[in-house]
Length: 78
Image (cartoon, rainbow, N blue to C red; front, side):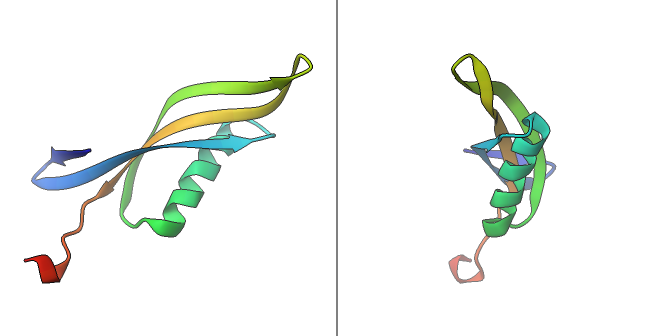
């Protein structure tokens, strides 16, 4: 999915980050992992939070994160 913003084009993806420590760490894990493979990350929007339970206890926090990054045109495609 691509959206135009201010004369530029941005790609938008959704990721789910997880952590046993909390939602903030789950979001951080999603963004950190994405930044290893993607450049020009612009916005991280948390769209959903949930937890995984085992025996009635929280064992994992999960955050669905929508990330946008600036679309770069490869020079050879011009």
